[in-house]
Length: 303
Ligand code: NAD
Image 1 (cartoon, protein in one colour):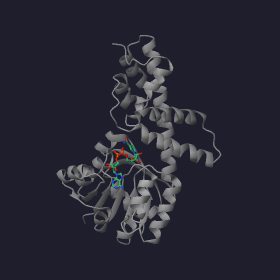
Image 2 (cartoon, helix red, strand yellow):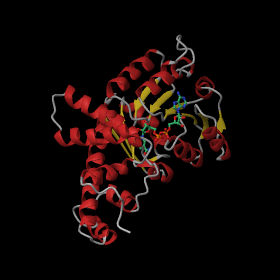
Image 3 (tube, rainbow, N blue to C red):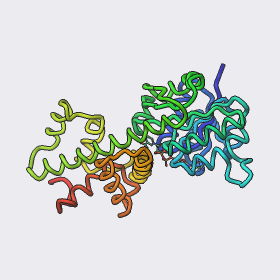
Image 4 (cartoon, rainbow, N blue to C red):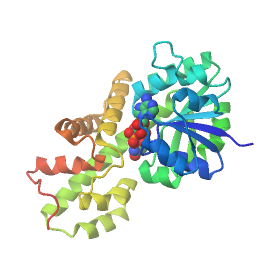
């Protein structure tokens, strides 16, 4: 039986995820606030919808891939004051809502409760792997919610991801994602410091990155971003403003639990500074430019 999947939010991540769902044989109906991504989905064999309501009415599964907590709340609960235009007012009972966006764990729990009241089964299923992972269909997906719903969602999740793990009840997917964002931001900051250090010593940085990647210093960040950082190519990818949002989620959740994360707090401040100076639209690896400036070296790589 063909599954109809509504995808709301067809940006850097949602667009390629929808394309992979089509490739896997699902019927995909997409909606995005701006029209261009909907046209791209139609070119890829999907169907366009003119509103959230129109997209979800026909769906067995709804995936949201939106920037932040207020966006997901508005789309799920409606924004016309009555809720009538939201996912939960228009989805058929039993529909699965998989929120793949990165949002606050407490908001994920609230949405699960609101969905339950309308007969909609909600999962928080944030992803890691970036744009390449979305394009290749190899995302790592951390899922919070009821075990039976996770199993029901698995055939759809398998079309977009490779590592799919049920990590606990509603909200836990988002908590694991916050930890993911701590590790990634810290890793980028340390790679940035290493690059500035190596360049200051006139070392062949391409050779250095190659050998570092093969040892204990190796990481997915180094593999995927090392060379673009050396070339100062900060085309997103994952935008600074989104990582700043995620580090806000992390620091609030750490405080709530009474957990002290000194390195996380420091890198959160650096990311916030990058955004504050107007670089929110760059890839998060642009943290390199800030680290360079701390040493008075802002001219980029040696020519
Ligand atoms: P994006 O800005 O490229 O895409 C978001 C899309 O949602 C845009 O096309 C926007 O027009 C649309 N949108 C916003 N509000 C809407 C609304 N009310 N109704 C319909 N469409 C709406 O962002 P992205 O990089 O795809 O990230 C999406 C989510 O995935 C974020 O929560 C982000 O933190 C997370 N994420 C991103 C990456 C990455 O590498 N880009 C990796 C993992 C997780």
